[in-house]
Length: 340
Image 1: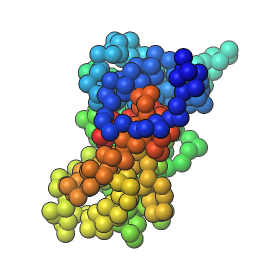
Image 2: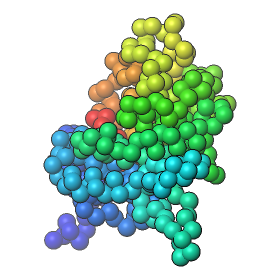
Image 3: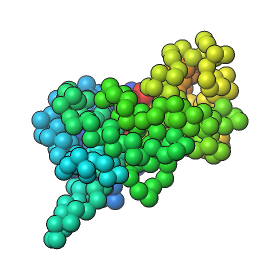
């Protein structure tokens, strides 16, 4: 009884083993009912579902979700144009992040502009693909044709059709969408390539946009990591191949400088930092590790030290926290599962 009334502080004695069963139970709880702390993320409900469903898939526990129910819910969030003319009205017809952004006609039958989002569309397709849904059954033409409206003259992408930022996060979302749909008609790849190359900084990393600081830990709505977004996008588009570290001189990006920047992000505690002078964090292990995997240089990671760091972020309640010995959250749990 005393342990219930006076629970120990989060992870005062972190485990030295990966607690898979606890993590599965943690994600099952998140699947059934999100804690009140996530109320402010209601607009990103589809993204939260992506972390839960994909996390269970990584843990080999996809059977814990009702696939039919989840698939039908995701499909219900797609925005559909009423006509060919509406498809050409400049809006984006992808997926809404939640019901709260899925507007309908008002009392005067005036159609309210849809709130579908590039990141939500990426998460929707990822969930459907993870659960085995045949993406060829989707209205992919509406997604891809309207996605062209989001690409800017410099090659970057906005996430919605009006009034939003533009940077590498949404470039990655667009590239991933085209890759999953196996159709690249939704973007001008050459313009995207030029934009990405302009984002590589003097130190080898990539900033979110040209001229900005190299970064590996930008979090938003289901994706992040400026350098990861840049390198992964180039890989998806076919502009760079595998094992880049072996053919660095012929690559369109500065691989030696990028490799040096990435490897310098592993800190003395074994974890990875997103940029110089930042604290180590669970999710950076994924972002940096992903880049090094694409570069064919993951063998240079001190895996033992990294694992030890990640296990200090493993919660006794299941899931992973951002920093050691804190409470877990869905986002960092997903990237912790993926990396460890």
